[in-house]
Amino acid sequence: MVRLHIKKGNDSLFLHDTTVNQDVESLTKDILAIYSLRLKALRLCDEMQSLAKHGHFLPPNMQGLTPDQVEELKLTDEYERKCIPQGGAVECPDNIGRRSGKAPNESMAEVIMKTITDVKEGLSAKLVTANRVLELKEVQDNMNKLRGAIMIVYPMNLPPYDPVQAELDGCEDLSGTQASLEVIEQGALWWAGKELLPEKLLLDYVGKNEKTKIVVKLSKKGQQAPGREQQLTEEQKKEMMAWQYRKQEEMKKLHEADDGDDYLNSQWANPNSLKNSFHGIGNIKWGPK
Image 1 (tube, rainbow, N blue to C red):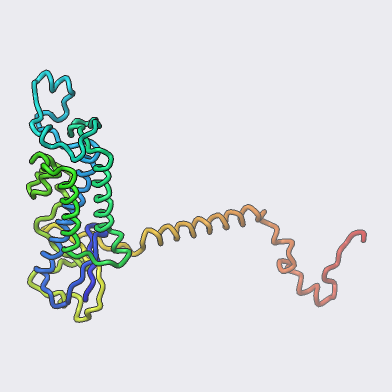
Image 2 (cartoon, rainbow, N blue to C red; image 1 turned 90 degrees about the horizontal axis):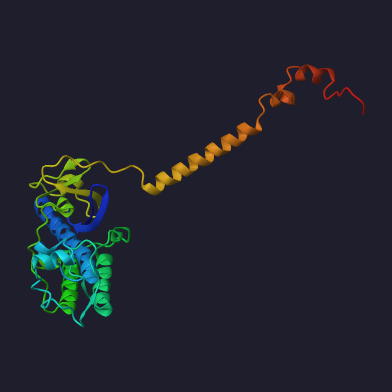
């Protein structure tokens, strides 16, 4: 199997196994499916953290308002009584006014947070270092874990406008958000500074050796070529800088110890040393014994 180290920019994402006989078009779809679902799961983890701390999302017309403003405008949250977490809610106000402040109790919050930790470990880029391949089924299983945790804590579901529920239902609206920049609808694969063309087979680029391992970069279709791989890793750069610093310190100490003309008193620096040795008058000292 050919092992692909998938990156986006300089960030490692995951490892993917394929064969040299797979066409680039289907390979791109396979990689993009894993990337998109993994990205969705990580977005969901972030929103679920807020859910565990501050409860369900407020209606759009109540977000950012103080309790006095809500009362003055006579606004109500119709889902406040429907979206009660299992075991009851505890008060934990949201300082930015996005969520209701009706958080799950400690045990239910622990269910959510533990699931988030497990899922993040299962989707972590550290799997690359551990040489573990990430399959689409694994990502789907992790999504199901998140879905299960929400069903346990909120058996009556969340409001449809809550980002957690929207992600689970597949109707999230990311327009105008930072997260939308990470979404890739049509992707392209790059290797060795070249775009892998959809109509080609992988063997047209890497040959017939099934034991090949290459770094492939994922980008949006139509974008310019991503930057080349760095020749040195961050660890190697740090080691080189440390070595250079030690060398500079050594040269500095040598320079401070050298007073400039000390070497002139050395035997090897005496221009008459050969003549004196022939006359047998070497190492003569003038002065009292």
